Amino acid sequence: MKTKKLTTILVLIMILAIAVGTYNISLSKFRLSDSNYSYLAGLTWHRSSPGLERGFEQASLENKPIAIYLWASWCQYCAEFQTNTLANPQIKKMLEDDFVLVALDRDIDSDVSYRYEMRDPPQVLFLDSKGNVMDRIYGKVGPEIFLPIATQVRDRVRSQ
Image 1: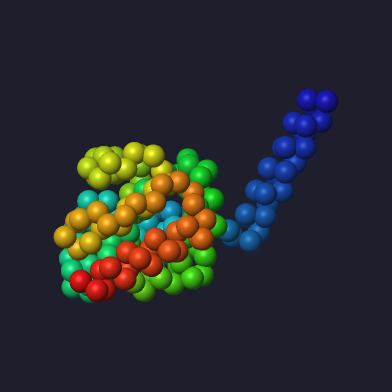
Image 2: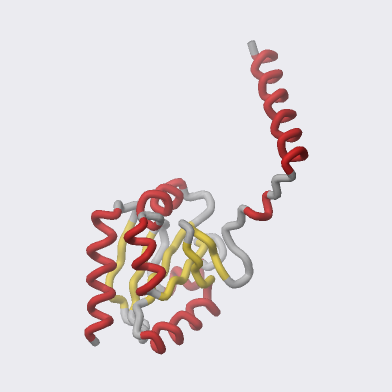
């Protein structure tokens, strides 16, 4: 039985290798981050410390709140949160239009995440342009929880 499973796995690997060679599929197109940005849930997020500083500048100039998203590549809850909540069309549009986005990779940006007491992903922290904490969302909440909180944060900043 074990030989049959191993043979099946090897055949699947060979088929995948042939498909990649035939169709010239490049894994470099599937990236989560580069030196300046993270690409999560179809959104472009500034990365880590320099990104956060640029985010504060942009937020001040555009009168927008900052959404800091703590994530990790190994976090299955982050993947679900990105797929089910952040990629929701209404939330995605609001985040793109009304927020400055910064992503912190839990394994790389731990110094910044600890500064804001963000230890366990997924988590979203909302700040104003001066760095004041406006609200926080813990865990893989759904759109029905995320949207009202983000809307309230956005509206509070607009009214200041």
